[in-house]
Image 1 (tube, one colour):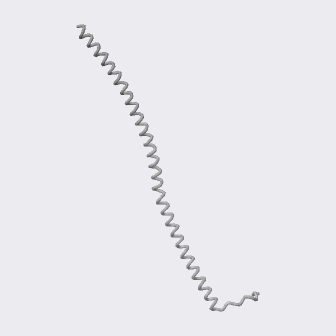
Image 2 (cartoon, one colour):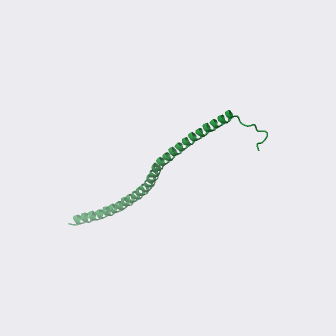
Image 3 (cartoon, one colour):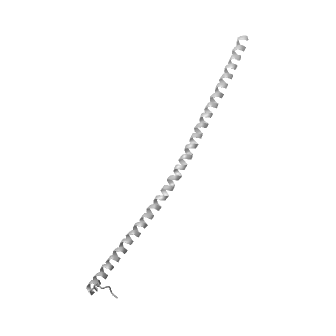
Length: 109
């Protein structure tokens, strides 16, 4: 049974509706293809960005390690300089003592 308030579609209206439906389906398929292409492009960009980002993270870690190493080397250099300064002071003291002994020996003899 057909509801009474609906009139039957004419053949032309049916053909127009079918054509419009076909057009809309074609537009939907074209839009979906664009979405698929954009998604593929996005995935390629994300993949291309992931590699440099990973490399940057590696370089940042290496930079941090190098900074720690440099700090340690600077401390070692400072420690070595202090040790050398202490040894130099001790040698100068020994030299002064030896010079005093030479001066005393020369004065006596």
